[in-house]
Length: 340
Image 1 (cartoon, one colour):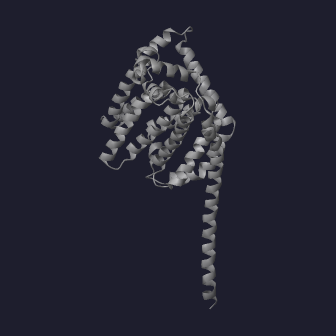
Image 2 (cartoon, one colour; image 1 turned 90 degrees about the horizontal axis):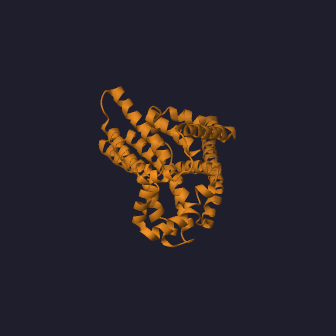
Image 3 (cartoon, helix red, strand yellow; image 1 turned 90 degrees about the vertical axis):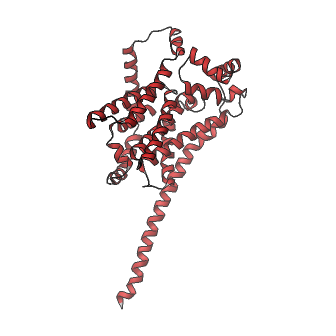
């Protein structure tokens, strides 16, 4: 009799405990979402106060002289081989259409939203179906908020279209390319792998034409990974061989542009290769000290350790497959350094 009286009470306690756990998780998610929203809101609001400056007006004048498509060819021959950035500056630049203020902030906002969407695609590719979409978007918001709060000069990185198309856009393309490569590595069927391969090839062409600092690590990493797979398996991986061919072709188009050498001839100071290596090493060291010294990255790493331990026990998780892939694992470290 006593057991029958206690049974409903036990069920009620279980329901209450589960309900408390649910509300606790919901409260935590809402609190994090609120913090992320408050962190991103100033950056979003400032988009409407962005205005053209410097090279924006030079681009507008050159587009009026040569036309939208003529500007791309002229600049490729006289200044730079970044064909993707040139196309965006010519075709998706309000100043090139004579608008000195209209639409400028909208472009800045779209570039910022592209970074958020690129983070979501990468997290979705790495984590698969382990988390709901709302948590993936929340994680993307946290990543973007941390990136923006650590950015040395948001005015130049976000609210200046010329800089955004040359630096922030390649960062987003890099994230999307990594997501496509992860999806290719974990695709269950040959048709899905072929689709991801074509998307990766297109993104590779766009990325190479955006910025050299993204292109060179990708070139070295992909060629090295393809050679490593051949040594390990004693056969060529035609998918990665195809990507290498596309990457080499895009690099030839970008690096062999006559405008690169015209621009070098205008330089008043000659910089040796050893000087470039020294400056690159110094910049990497400063970025590393900045990220670890301020405590943000170590604190986040400690907070994510329990989650990482739980995810490591899932054998089919794409993230765990990537951890065993030297090319993609190396790319993630390079991406962390480059974005910092």
